[in-house]
Amino acid sequence: MLMFRETNKELYQVLNVTLQQLGITSAQYMVLKALHTKPCMGLSELAEQIYSNNSTASGIIDRLVKADLVKRERPDTDRRAISLTLTPQGEELINKALELRLDRLKPLLKLPAEDYDTMFRIHRDIIELIQQGGEEA
Image 1: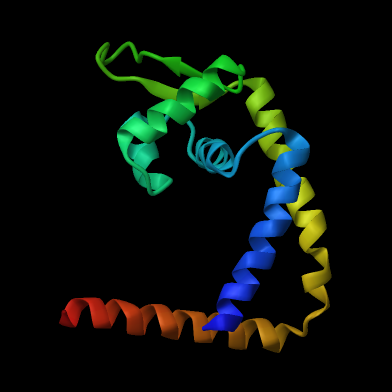
Image 2: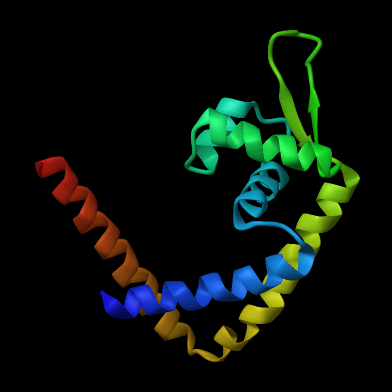
């Protein structure tokens, strides 16, 4: 388990350096990435996507709106709902973040394909065992 922890720490460090260069936090990155992947999300759905609660997600959104990276819109069909989308600046920033992150992870491409297959199979097995353990509790 220590090896998983060390790997996760190194991957997080790579991401963190990239985000610091761009002036955003990891929570803001998760929101931008979620809205990049699925535009026009509501707050509750976004909170679920980033494994957060509505209050925390709302605070992150407030800061991103203030930075002109995200915009809130009220759909014509439901004036009570709020739709969250990236601004052009938000799209530009998340694209840059994804590009920088990919550049920093390129050394991983040196691993043989069969090593990736083995790693993914083991990760799937671990997840399945953890989920089965949770069902038995």
